[in-house]
Length: 243
Ligand SMILES: C[S@@+](CC[C@H](N)C(=O)[O-])C[C@H]1O[C@@H](n2cnc3c(N)ncnc32)[C@H](O)[C@@H]1O
Image 1 (cartoon, rainbow, N blue to C red):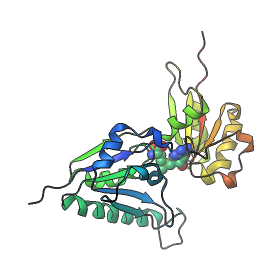
Image 2 (image 1 turned 135 degrees about the vertical axis):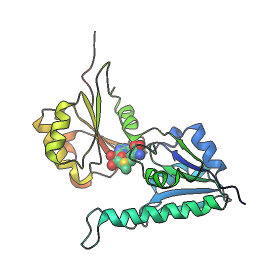
Image 3 (image 1 turned 30 degrees about the vertical axis):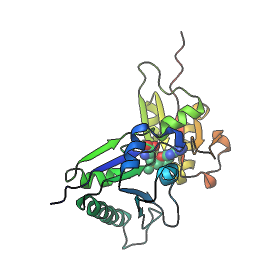
């Protein structure tokens, strides 16, 4: 009987290829198959980070998202379409593992921090030998390039999704010592309004494509919500502790 291959979920960091860990590089280069999630017609951000480290003997397995937006016309439901897609992706990865091939699934930032790899992990980790390699997540890439310490001493950090309803976002932000808001996109106007209402706009920092070559740091008031890319986040650092 063929010994099954090993699954690894590999964080490749927020964009700068030098933020790849040594362990990520080792597992990546030893994998028979390198799998990655990607939008239709795109090369894939995570793939672009590690492409130069692959060789021609490795199989590349793009897992192409069937939809690009969460808004679908009934009777289609985003949740169902995407769950089916993750089932199919897990089956494609499992076929390689069952044939004895090691599969590395790459993921932007960290695999367990809002990473798509999680949906494969949930389906496969009980069936196959699995290892997860942490990566530098976007929020820490963001604070580093902003040059902004995030949490001092006993402060607590809230990581919030911009998708949250306005009331809930406001409540959570009002209670936070420090916060990072991810998934801005079409939620940007709502998030900026909440920050204004709470008097936090001055303390908030916006960064696009942190650590990538085309990174931009833009004052909050000057952000054009229509042009805010998927790779953007907001940092509200904790109050400086000075003695
Ligand atoms: C699906 S989550 C993936 C998070 C990723 N696994 C991580 O560890 O950071 C996507 C969100 O991460 C944030 N993001 C990812 N990379 C980023 C970057 N280089 N700069 C700014 N935000 C980024 C954006 O808020 C984006 O909407």
